[in-house]
Every structure is written in structure tokens, then in C-alpha cells.
Length: 71
Image (cartoon, rainbow, N blue to C red; front, side, top):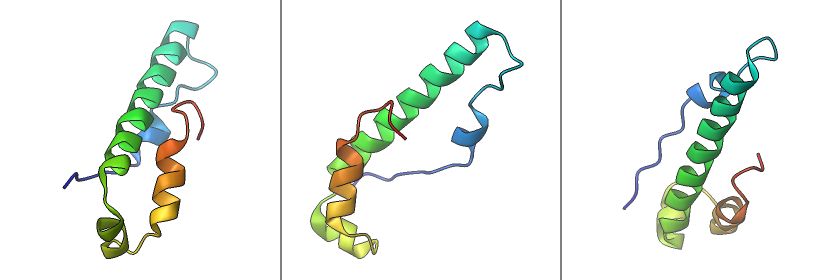
């Protein structure tokens, strides 16, 4: 079973507009990679695991199917 960790760090990983363009670019790439990894882990959950977590399997399927650039 895959363990998913959701952290508050993803919100702070987005660079502010005051930072340089390369810094913001790296922050966005990091955020997109985190989303892709988390959605891949979600996709690994079975319907039973989802129900055990109290989450509708359809919600997990929807979230896991979203592209990495979409919040």
C-alpha cells in the first residue's frame, strides 16, 4: 500500500513574484513534480483503501487523472 504525505510545504514552494525568473521556474517545476508523484500514489490506491480512508474512490480517480500542471 502506498503512503501519501501531504505537506504544507507545497504552498511555500511557490516563489513570490519578487524572486528571479529562474527561481520561480525551479519552484514551479518542483511543485509540478510533487503533484505528479502524489497523483501517481493516489492512482495506486484500491477502492477498498480509499473507503478505509473515508474518501470516495471516484474522487481519488478524478484527482489522480488530473494533469500535473492543474491544481
